[in-house]
Image 1 (tube, rainbow, N blue to C red):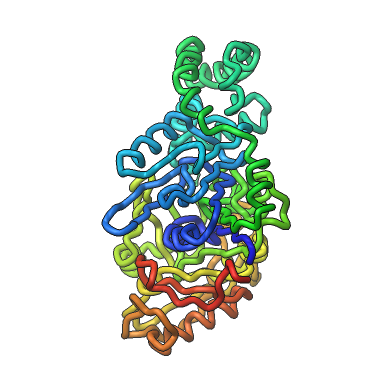
Image 2: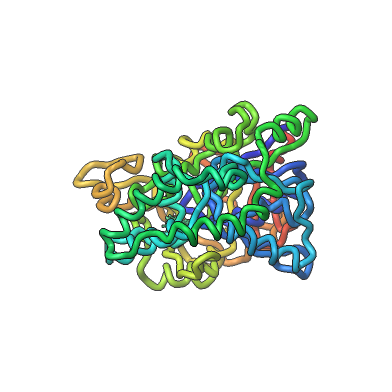
Length: 429
Ligand code: IMP
């Protein structure tokens, strides 16, 4: 019995929610290890819908939920998310929830900068979630972040605030903005500190104990490999490493602890925000995928761009992230198409490529090479075994598996937990 790391293998929004819920209900601890409240996750338990952005999914079922050091934490958002959950009857206390004391904080000045930059960039904007994620990671790496542990030492914060504000004041001046109101920031930090400190601890120690007791740990990734700051479609990426390897560094457990890597893969492709997207369909087919798949962002409500399945990208993501097996989601969105297409390679200035090149201009210029297959007229929605699937849908899954060189561990056929074809249980691997 091992641990499981779940990551998105495309540009996020692969349908991690349902898979993570199912795994979280069987885990003893759930750990977020990167990103922040740019993630969006809707949980439906019985009649109740819970919306999570920052808290790990285990929180709803009372499973030990941990925010690892790799996450950037907005303390005011945290307070709001906890209050909403508590109003829905969810218990959040120091027994079932912990935050790494070394987490870097997202401050109002980060949100400001995120917005100022995006506005100034005009059509060249990244299309961020506007939550200050990038600027907060910059300050962390720039060694001027305010961290969770600093909230216990606010009287000694002056030199750090000087460094941080000097940096931001210079940037703000460039945008014609007034300097940071230091007194107001300090007062806000004083006000919020007790909320965060109630859960703060060296979570690596807690995880070490959990691990020693033989508990099952679920590492819950956010976004997707193609948004990874090193491996994604740079600069149209998020500011963290979204690959499976981050589960170790972002939580304080070694790489041997991260276990089965489950890559979540949507049966077609979507992307929210700007950046290259080789198989994007700006036509009626793209529209149909978006409508059938209800492709609107959970955090920002933005319409997602849609296109055919890109096996080149997913093969690359699976290799980079060491994916053990995939969960294929939203297959039913392809129901009823006469023909379906899969991208098997790219053409770039007369050359054939079997990978996505690193340079942004090349990424924008690659043309997809498609393989066409017959679609299926029956429905895959709600299927719970291979026997429930139309023969052509099985052929599609097999072709996907072959092209991405990674086996299918499960197929999800509706938002309902039971509507899943389980080939290989990641926890039993
Ligand atoms: P940021 O993470 O807010 O800086 O946004 C950077 C890019 O990542 C933008 O294209 C966002 O749309 C995208 N992004 C961030 N979080 C998510 C997510 O949870 N799902 C899908 N895209 C995301």
